[in-house]
Length: 339
Ligand code: DAH
Image 1 (cartoon, rainbow, N blue to C red):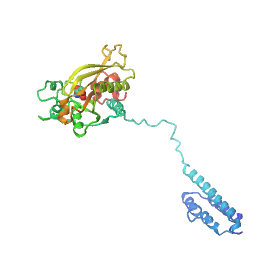
Image 2: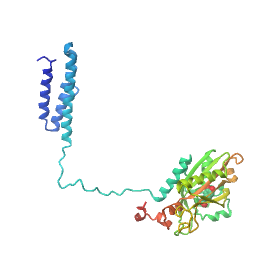
Image 3: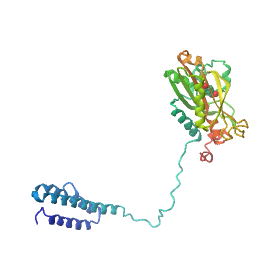
């Protein structure tokens, strides 16, 4: 039998199949693989020998040798993978039983609300900035046009750390920090935790969260403030939400306003959430006061801006229909599991 003949290939096939049939453990399988399918294995060598076959038989022999290699390899892989999946199952183990209920964590409801608000402003081109919770009197008050002895300081009962350091009472100081290191145009939101020395009750807690917003550029007008906050309210609450703008006072804005949104529960008809008024107070806002620009070195003749502050707990209380702010801080799983 010549080494280029079809019979020769048949001979190799028979030997390979017989050996494969007698493979009965992993070592034997590996030996077979090396002997036949390895780099220097019989089938590879066979393919290498094609070049020495007389020309008139070369093509046919090459195709036959290649096919043989593929078939043996497939048979080997089939057998080998069959061996691997051949797992014996303990009969006391019932794979159809449900798995252990691993408790998956979830985001705190306040973080859910913060993320929803943040994502709306991110989609409008705002960036996110953060500032420290232990602030200086300068950033929390003075740079925000609230000098010592200004009566507006009484609006915010402050936890002092030292005579000049305090726990920030609002996120507005981050506005100052942003304007100090960034020149206009500025479009930023600044979420964070704030502290007030207030008596703890269902309505107020010694700490809570705010989300500050700031937009500074040439020609920013009150219409931009209104348009931005209306667009936000419609995306956050309901696409037909109306807003009501009331004059108010904050030292760092002029004019200052408070914005009410139409109650999303009763659609303005009056219910217990909105205390029958049809409106919900949700944020404070205004046009940045020239004195604030002065403290950060921004030219108030060239630039204007608006700012706003949203109380995150307030929105969460309203949105989830919760009647006691303290629940957010008790870490009671029965409460948290509902979100
Ligand atoms: N900082 C204010 C507060 O804590 C909220 C606020 C009002 C922020 C008006 C602003 C603003 O940026 O323009 O009550």
